[in-house]
Length: 299
Image (cartoon, rainbow, N blue to C red; front, side, top):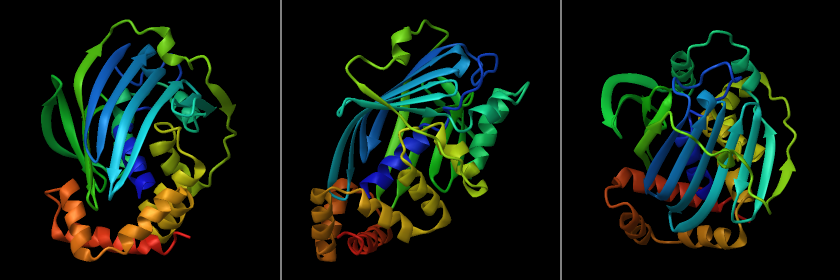
């Protein structure tokens, strides 16, 4: 469950991080810094750096995720430089590099309109434009809605995202947007003392092309197993999601799942209500059933 919540969060809030060659524009501004605050089950900060019209991007997050009694703290960075993706885990002091699986398709699209690319990306994720707008951090955003929640978009940049799935509430909102300013080159470099590993990119089947376009570039920190979890979720294969989630849990997390699954419904409801006071009875019931099912895959 923790993995699924983190994947949902990282996927929704990072939808805009696509790249092209230096002579193509991902954004209509050359550089920028966006600061976000996270609320709900995911609390923390996220800062995004953009340079060379989006050819270079870096996202740094410090997040504490709480889901059904689980608490997980993360301190991570994701650097995107054209076709290269770098994922950094500051807690373990490790980093991995891999290729952006959708870079060539975007880079070879001559004369692309950054706005159209952003809209196409939103549509590929199942989002549709509501026709409504709202001012976020001083910018007029279009509000897009889909099964995963809502996203507020300004010039292909997500300035707010909001999801609530089975009681997992995640909100991220920009509190500051600065554009066309100088960005230190160090923001796109791996700090000294961090071990870097190269990861080979495998060719995906045609059925996964849309998944890679939607999530691969924006969240290079995902393993193949986590990407498969998202695909299973999109396909409605919750058995696959739970099996994959269970396989990635620590012993402590597995013990906690078993403990929660053995709770009477009244105690489970009390625990969830404490975390999410506004959650509905139906969502609590679904979460309880999901926890019970998850326990079957925990060995």
